[in-house]
Image (cartoon, rainbow, N blue to C red; front, side, top):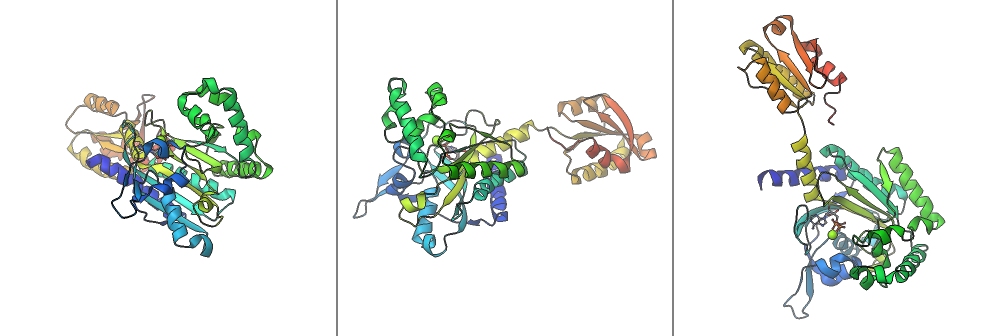
Length: 407
Ligand code: ATP
Ligand code: MG
């Protein structure tokens, strides 16, 4: 509705622009797929498949079981293979956006129908691709004006992941009595899930770490991803428990969180899934991707806007000053400043109370004297100091003072 719809659209539009800049093209995938697709890709022991899928038996002759898609990746991979691209032209870059469906307990930031924006890049085994995916999320974050945290991990590949899996399995068996019901139940089939268990937190923290099991190639790949992120100025932390809920990840996994959206803080997640195309019947082609929770980013965006403060309050004393203040305000806004032109006809004291209330960093005051000398009084509302500035120099003075750097 209204403002909420606008925030969702703003996030989706911004994500499209970022993806297009990276030469990623849109793919439209259906909301209905065969249930098996998700069982074979997301994995039988993932939460999505075990508990969260909406599915029904169709009344066709074969009584096909259909599912409402809980995520986008499997449908993109299916379409990619069906079009024969895995063999004819494997290097492809796609994005999708649209509704996903999961049986969840609805709460703030967690819905049974929600929107995801996702990118999938095929045929690129190099670490630059893993880093580029995170750069896209970082660009989106910047354009939306949000603070986000990046966490990354590496799960190893076909060579070293089985060794790691075995170590976690042995660890789980040794602590069987202490595991929660879910972890115990899926331990033999998917021991890694123990690592991101929200109940057995202590056990998960003490579990074997994937970085101690990586083969040389995976170690080098992970080091390069981290270097590239550092070079690009994307701060990130290594989280050895980041395994993701889906079964298909290899090497890099990442998750992006926001502190602005409350308990449901994960706003995006992704990584590398080099075995997925082959396991769904295609050629052995590398794959990487991420999905953004559009609803959660929109919530973060709204929270950021709600918390944001004016850069400057413009106070005009008298009608003539008001006319000049209008043009000054327009110039300041054109320079990217967030400016409120205060209601005229009030005394300075009332004006400053309003400036305080909207959390303005600066007050720009213009009366008859200032009008005559083509100056303004510039008051720093944090330090309560005031100086006289020429009207022509106002924008330079405000940017020198960092008025447009939002905290
Ligand atoms: P969570 O741990 O919050 O359940 P997830 O691991 O199930 O997330 P993914 O499958 O990785 O999530 O989906 C990617 C993103 O989609 C998440 O980071 C989140 O922002 C968003 N998302 C997932 N489930 C929901 C939901 N039920 N409602 C709204 N957004 C969701
Ligand atoms: Mg989930």
